[in-house]
Length: 122
Image 1 (cartoon, rainbow, N blue to C red):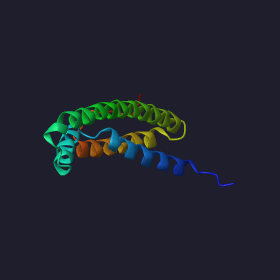
Image 2 (image 1 turned 30 degrees about the vertical axis):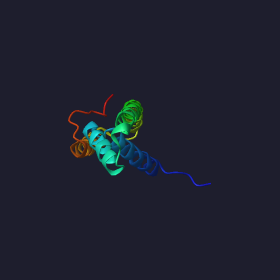
Image 3 (image 1 turned 90 degrees about the horizontal axis):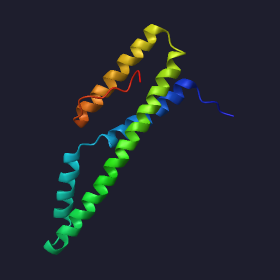
Image 4 (image 1 turned 45 degrees about the vertical axis):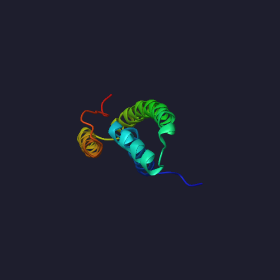
């Protein structure tokens, strides 16, 4: 039986969390522009506009709620990871880990227009 090494497990979880976070933190402006571009490409008729906009807005609200739920779950997972790592790493390594995570978050938020997010030490 293949046993997953802890480092590999964290790498896989990290990759999944980064992907999920990029989806979860997508700017709202993008969604509005995307809907307008879709309507234009689909050549939405005037008689379809209200229903199309309602469907887009409704699903947009559902997606926003899902992103918020995912963010909450990711924050919980990241906090649990840090607790687990605090039992493995010495204080210098843990401080370096925190700095690495902060840099990763900063890069991700620059790409997605977010400013204030702290996933460590919860």
